[in-house]
Image (cartoon, rainbow, N blue to C red; front, top):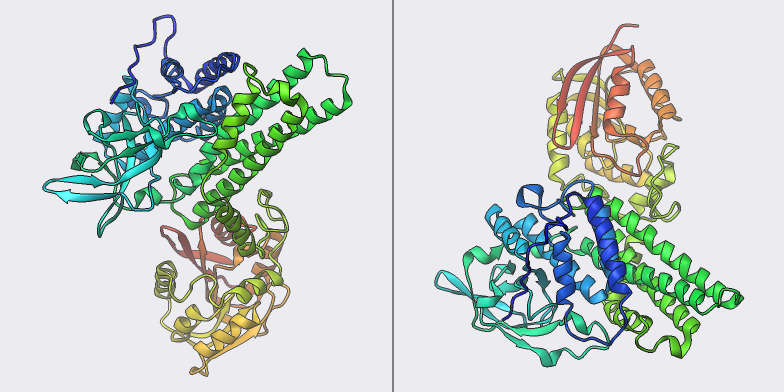
Length: 590
């Protein structure tokens, strides 16, 4: 198997020292490559890959201590990564596909591999070797069978981009009984056979995505990357669609430039129909840029994080971007081909190459399933305000009003226990902490604001002579009554706090995971009303999630800090845990 070997860049062309200069050099390279006549070449763009290496594109994903620029891994680099992918895609889609695969392979090793594996790969990439990701195979799963201290491959990969020269790809296979495992074999010594007969595509011929038969090839334990199942771990897996979509968007941007130049060269600028077509293409190109910008912003927040809300946001963004770019690119190709006609699609003009390659590259797996996933995500968020159907997926503005009653009614209509109060380890730990924080063993009259289905209420009932639970959802209160039905000390009322407040005074008030639903004026009203209803020396217990939630007007820390600033109470106990904060306040004498 041949290698892609590259000489070091000459002294007058040093490697890019920062991302800005890398972008500038990549743009110069892309414009140079795009200006070449379309000669119908079908061989892999090896010289173009060498030029990418010369300007520092191949090594850029590695951190600085490994000779890179942290592209895609260091904070603040997602926008540059997606922009570079679009730039390379605007030069040549086959080159863009190879570069995107290389970046993906590097990111997987940096995320899941050992420091030694990352260093080894960086050294080989500095020599000009390429990485990649070969995951697609035949219906029969490719397997890794244990063989002594090593493993033996059984099976084949299809669509193995750059099969004849990518030296260190990520190759996935199933280890029986353990799961889907990433490997990073040394292809030049592996003995795998290439099936060129597999690859007769409509476009993207130059990506040389041949079939590869790995049967009986040996892989060593130090070539296994991460643990079984890591490859499919989100948001890095499904969220990674933003990278190939950015490459495709680059071709759309190139079509915009080519069509404008063609109209100018052919003096068609006075044709109102052609100008209208150019306007349509310009709008589509701008929309693709907006998708890249937003995807980069979401990736900065979400990549390499495991919290459900970040995973969901990244996947939804990637799914939407993928479908949106496919549709924008398809409509752009139709508009451009109508504009340039049959003569414009003849070689050596570049339209023929870009449109043929883009048509093939847009055919990504499971588009219908992706579209259905977007629809289900929208339905699941129908009750939400930020990011929901009413405000739009990209509504990042601060919530200006307290959450209305219907918000919670719709949540409980969909699920009896929407926050998994009964089963969540987080909730159980929080409830144990809340009860153990109570300064007194016993309270005469307790009030729980936002009791929901009564899981915490039941525990508090053992420390109070009487306990009143309030909630805005009558359905949740039905469940709470059933849960606490055996205790005559517990009662419930459906109220919208702070607009509605109970009569009487209380020596214990618990406000748990509810006050961040209020905007500041309502928080002030609630604090004032509760102060009037709490006996001197009584205790107020505040417990709230500290992570930001887009739908909530306030964060947990803001709630607690505000309440601690009130003159009616003094703080007597404070705890901060991994995801929540607890404060106990004592009511001062009037």
